[in-house]
Amino acid sequence: MSRSCTTNKSDTISDGLPGVPLSRHLVFGASGYIGGHLVPFLLGEGRQVRATARNVEVLESREWTGVELAAADAMRPDTLDQVLNDVDIAYYLVHSMAAGADFPRLDASAARNFAAAAERQGVRRIVYLGGLVPEAPRSAHLRSRQQTGDILRAGSVPVTELRAGMIIGPGSAAWEVIRDLVNHLPVMVTPRWVSSRSTPVALSNLLRYLADIPQYEVAAGQTYDVGGPDVLTYAEIMRRYGSLVGKRPLIIPVPVLTPRLSSYWLRLVTSVPTNVARALIDGLSQDVVADDDRLAKLIPQELLDFDAAATESLEAERQHAIPARWVEGAIACDNFRPEYSFYAKQAEGSAVTNASAADLWAVVSQIGHKGELFYGHALWWLRRTVDWTIGGPSFRRSRRHPEHLRVGDVVDAWRVIAVEPGMRLTLLMEMKAPG
Image: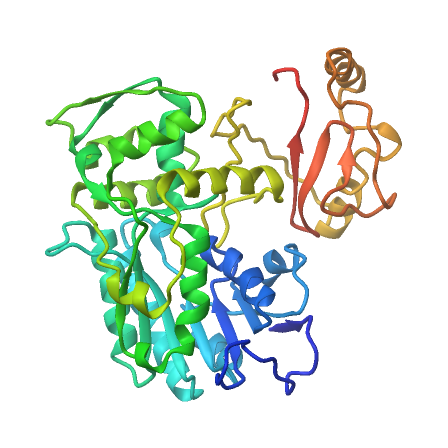
């Protein structure tokens, strides 16, 4: 299924680089962390972009302009040929870490399906973002990322693989784990992995590499390491991040505490899904230091050091819309801000009804209309009054339509940050008072 927000498909847009043929770019996995940032970055460069996700409604809620949207699933080969048709450059950005222990098999199957479809459709280049891999990797996550690249390369379409370690940017899984540890634990009893070394790279630097690498024929069939200018242990990363947000974590390494054991208590302190966090932590027991000289010579740019990259990430969270949920294996940032508290988990409830989804959505969409909520009106009025008396935002009304909600609408002390009609409404509480 394809839903287009662009001009006629036969039109072409220059890539903006001298001597580069006109091309169409497919971002496969556009609802994920990197894909969600790469699509607007490519659009800003004047590229012609087709973006895919298993659930195309997720992409429609992003409100991108000038991009063709389509539904596709690497585990369903029948969905791939249509989205790869007439594509020159295909970015492969999906993984199955959130699926649990079976993710290596799923990753391998998905890569085989994608490589075969790309070959049938005559794609010129596949760009795959993998992970830095040490010699003899012990982590199933890192071995799977390596295997995915090998499977893609086994096809006839030339593959360029970029291998990155920790990415410093809002929503990056490893970055969010580090931040959650520092944000919530003043004292940490840590395993050996805090002494492992890494070369964290700024999201903005990585996006530049991803956008430019397809334009170089010499990069076809090549694998490049991606890294930033600093070589840091994870303990140093936590301390330097802490200094930026006014925290000084006490880190106590305990040699007998293994990465596997440490991964079990992460669910208590991090918003990153447990399966994803566990897969990442398993890969931290070895150094992953990038040898990025070849890539830096091919695509020169000013690489941000750790402090600059972290500051850029924090500022991006303050300025941009908040990702509303973990979707399509994506890592959505928790929007932690040093001046606010944050609780990573959730309370939930459910009810059974005979009403249709359309009827339910019609009711849900009325939230805040005429200032009314659905339950406990007197209690909510008292709650809002407490917030208002200490300078909170309660008693605001700025719905733009009485029946339909849109991202950015304000419903009393709540802001609409995501709307998937008939499926999901995500609100951010902006009250100053706790609770």
